[in-house]
Image (tube, rainbow, N blue to C red; front, side, top):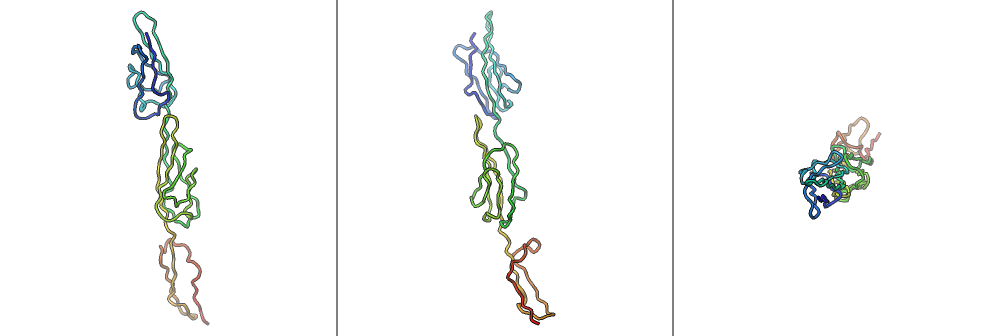
Length: 212
C-alpha cells in the first residue's frame, strides 16, 4: 500500500481553522496519529488537524495504511503549530495627565514583548520601544497608543490599543480687592480659573503696596 501525504504548510498558527492533508497519487486512506501529545485531529481518519484545539509545538504525524496480507506502509510528516502573538497594554488609571507633569509615565504590558509603540495624533512624545510618555511634551487632547507585534512565521501581526488624555495645565489668576492699603486694613485675594483644592502655586507678579 501507498501512504504518502503532505500538508500544504509545514508551519501553522494556532487558532481557528484546520489543516487538511493532501494524499499522494494512489495513496489509500489509513490511520493518522501524532506525537507528542497536544495535537488534536478534527478527523483522525482523514488526518485533519484542529488548529483551535491543538497546543503549540512541533509534532510528527504518521499515516499508516494496511492492506490485506501486505506489510503496512507508514509515512511521517513534521508539522509545527506556532503560538500566535498576543499582548494587552494599560497605563495607570485614570489615564489622564496634566501637560505640566514632568514625570515620565510608564505602561504595563501583559503578554508578548518586543513590539513597537506609536501614538495618534503625533503630538504626544512616546518611546517607541517602551511606550513611556512625557505629558509635559504633549499638546492637550486625546491620544490612541498602539502596540504592534510583527508577524512571525505563520502567525499574522497583532496590535492592541490604549487611550490617554492629556489635560491642559490649570491657569490661576489672582485678583486683589485693592492694590494699595495701609497697616490694619484688610485686602481680599481671589483665585480664579482652577480648582482651588487642586491648584499649583499662583505665579509671581501680583504685589500689593502697603503704605505706612
